[in-house]
Length: 420
Image (cartoon, rainbow, N blue to C red; front, side):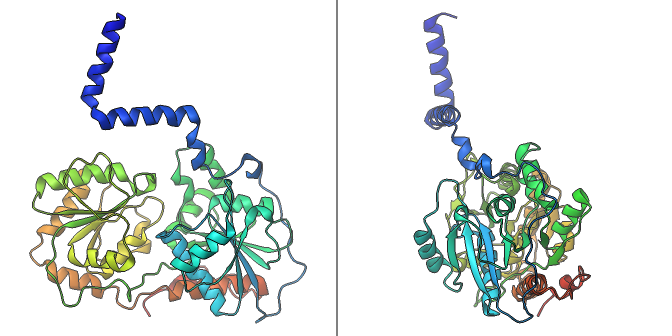
């Protein structure tokens, strides 16, 4: 091909993909050339465990029962609106209410501004009052420390060399965050560390057991039915809602796009509401709301009929929050997920675009939308995070006091997690 022909070919391709497509291709080339992908991997190579330690130093004795404990929590910088961080702060608040002192050790390989993080937490989670420190300055002066992600488990071993009790509060099966490569294995190895594992829900416990043969303490999922509730007075419902997170593979963004496009073709009269991140390449009419406060989100759930509540690494908190507001969640069907969300008002769908679209269509076409919404909301009345907090506190205190009362209560902790 001649030089002129090559230029003409490139011009035709640019015309075909448009300004947005050209910008994306230029950004992709810059992304690859600069190694920007490394920014998403938030561990220095020196902080990754080269092998599993056989043991880690423990205190020579337990605390006297009832004595206040200092409990560390290792996490990434908390982001406003993060459901995972909000769950962690609920657990921290429960420990503080019992008289324990909590220290949050923040790990960020790009640097930590402790003062800014303290101010941000006070603004967005004013009901919790831990001390914030930089994890890379050393994890010390605590009786116990809790890992909150696979990265933080590596960090605890690397920077927490003093004797302490080590626990691992797990909200997702994190190896599934990645393709089967290095990050998958870095995450999977943490389940075999000599930590006391605490799984949020039976699904996660079963997933870990399936891959490792190891069982964990289980604490129940919670839902704040005081915050998420149907609108009063009742309002006419229409449309569907979707929580959009394109950059998180576990949220099934591309699958949701296929489903929503099919749903729109079948039900063009139904408005599609999107919140979270701005959708990319969806190419159908949507109403984008951006990031919403809890009150705004409850309002949106309370005036729509159904919503996509998708996750492939544990059941998503969104599903039960939708139910509490009278919205019918359409959830990607996974056998173990039914252990966590045994609710007759959930519409389980095979994880294909057509099946998810059909489930949404059946929900909006039901002749008794108002009655179904009321029944869905009634099914979770009284649900709260209190049982989760009690179970977590009991496990931490059992570990630091060494009472051994929870040594064989794998199922009992779950049984206490029903409605209050």
